[in-house]
Image 1 (tube, helix red, strand yellow):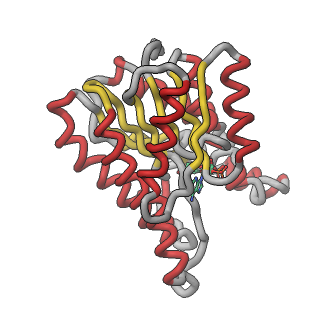
Image 2: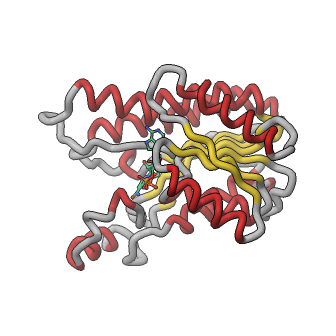
Length: 254
Ligand code: NAP
């Protein structure tokens, strides 16, 4: 497991959090990484530097997702930066990780927040995959980052949960189409993870303990807990797994 030398990976939303962890791990395994971000250029630079200072290869690509033409903008930047690196055109591993969340129960959800959630979390990955497949070599990998909320009900995260449910369905459906090219499509579903998203809830010992208690290991997940499984899905060792949703919650569903 772990030999990604000669492969190119695009990880959306890898300036921070889980995406950064995945980018770092795939780079450790030898892949050239496109570090995508939306607005936090400094964080994207930090991810790239952490990879290059460890001997890996990476470049950053900016594209705000959720706008018409977002996937075109992302891949225009990707193609340009890849060529600037002197790398072969093409893509081997696509990780759809970037997402946002406007928490709100049914009585609070607004049209604007719902549309934005779907545009970023669901529509953008679909069209990124469409563009990515035009570049992806046979035997490639598509890894979608979903969430435990698609099987464990969190009513306060209604729109977000719906957007992630669609990603689970996309994975399952698309995998059947891409088998003939040896491309696998899988979903990773994390529970609570130590990122900016959970920072406010982790700010007090009580909040931290409440999130940790979801897992049978009584701790909050780390980006590396998700990234190590993503590395397996990116590797040749996972070639017989496709269309699956892998629970990476530390046993939170048990
Ligand atoms: P995070 O720390 O908030 O990072 C989000 C990343 O996505 C950043 O790189 C951000 O770019 C990018 N992004 C967000 N909106 C974007 C937009 N409109 N256009 C372009 N880029 C955008 O998130 P995270 O906690 O690591 O979550 C990563 C994934 O795991 C998400 O799919 C999330 O739903 C899922 N997940 C997280 C948890 C958790 O507990 N953290 C649990 C289950 C599932 P900038 O840096 O430029 O803003």
